[in-house]
Image (tube, rainbow, N blue to C red; front, side, top):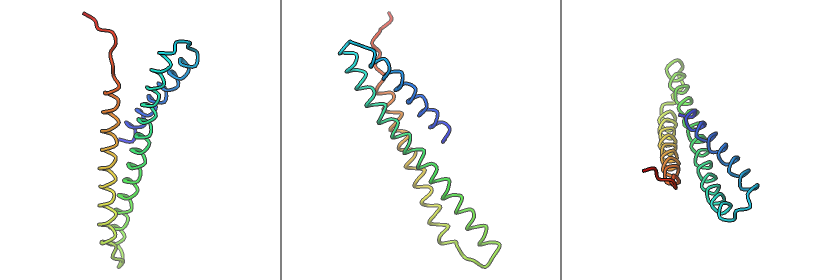
Length: 120
């Protein structure tokens, strides 16, 4: 999932760079305003992708810690089961948060779609 979100982030960055270059070279005030509005949307989408990647990474770390705690608990006398429950549940919460960020980003991406040319 991190790869999918990173791919979306890369496309957002590429689109923002292309749009920014076009806006800087344009003299059309209406285009510059549309470009500015789209760049604002791309900035929000980029932040959502970054947040999603952060949550997914935190989730992976917490699930890894859970596995380590359970393994160590089974092979030694150390009882980390209560901590493992907490890290697992926190990891799941991070994953759910990442899914919410991902959903929000995809909804923004489709909302921005505005087809100006209609083919009959």
